[in-house]
Image (tube, rainbow, N blue to C red; front, top):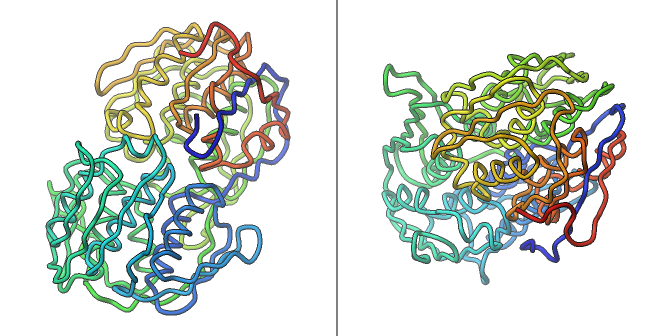
Length: 458
């Protein structure tokens, strides 16, 4: 079952060529940050293109609970009247972040240097995810956290009454941890410094500078990126135009690549260099993708993607250093790999084991049930491709409350020999509420199903 209601099994069957324009939702990472940074500014921030998936709606409710005024004016059009850095008020109830690891970790960072106490929880999936990677650096500022064994939700965070600035080297490549530390640093005196050996998505840095924070990013030899933030600025309200999400765009793009006869346009997709690893990888595999009309929207580079069926894609080795720029896209890349020719090896992917689910295990078991040969270890996933239309399918795959696992297998079903089902597609609403309608509008055949289909959920 989903943490947001009853389970919704779905089945996807082989379809003809996909045609048309795919208007994918606004970027989830930027949507979270627009709400949070708007709440920390003084005055009214206006947002267009906001993703109205459940994850982002949960963050909007959380900002209201901390004292900001958050109003929806129309589809994707929102405003946030902020309370200033350090101006949050103590919430009167538990903060439920639903399925969103980004939401809960960034919000913890935001309140960790203000003298208040807040308790956080989430759905069954989020309550399994580790929070220690965030609470450990927040403790350096003077915050305290009390949670379940293993540093898991529900968790109470006591903000530091007299925070101190910190210098912190990220032990893992994580934009969530980096952002949480920077957000905590906003209300600490002096300079907070974050060092990342490998670059991760830089939406927080871009947006903080847009809101008026004093922030610099330098490349420092073997240390990597050194990000220096001056504490206690007055953030200025902004008008934020949220670009379309490259992680959501990956699903119609990849479906068009494997469904014979497809030719679609996906306009206005973010081309941020810290998010484009999948598209670079697909191009190396031989995917036919044109990046048209490159431009900048809301401080982010975007382009229109013209995508056609690509029957000549080859398996490749995906270098581990690319993982931070495509960490959410490995599930759908595994599907592409299954329909390519030859072996695709994805290294440096151990972070996938602590996402909404253990995504390496979930994709490996599901693809095996669909007739694809898989090899895996703690940090690597290898897929033996079966060529265009070569995947047998015919299985029901377990999503483990993970929206990206659900969408990946439903895309696979669009090109497999036999339909592929998922045991629960309800989590898709967290990031891509119109996924079913959009894919079917392009020519897909995704349907609600009753009970199990095929040999049984894996």
